[in-house]
Image 1 (cartoon, rainbow, N blue to C red):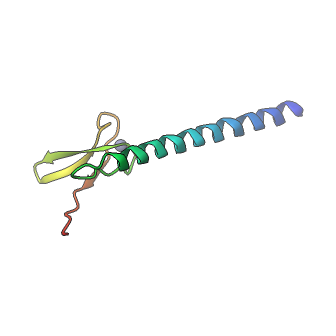
Image 2 (tube, rainbow, N blue to C red):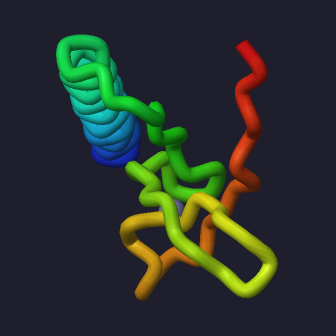
Image 3 (tube, rainbow, N blue to C red):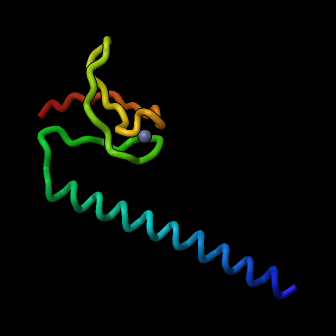
Length: 82
Ligand SMILES: [Zn+2]
C-alpha cells in the first residue's frame, strides 16, 4: 500500500505547512504590536486569536472580537492600577 503511505506524508506536509504559516502570522502580529504601542493594549480573542476592539455595552466597556460577525469572543476590560 504505497499509495496510502504517500497520502499520509502529504497530509503531514499540509498540516505542518498550515501550522508554520500560523506561527509566522502570529510572530508578525506580535512584532507589529510591539512596534506600535497603543494607549490601551488590545488583547487577542480567546476564541479565534484575532484582534479585539474596545466596545461599549450596557454593563460597561468590554473587549469585543473584531470578527464579531463570525466570532463572539469577548473579554472583560481589566483595570490597570499602576
Ligand atoms: Zn474572535
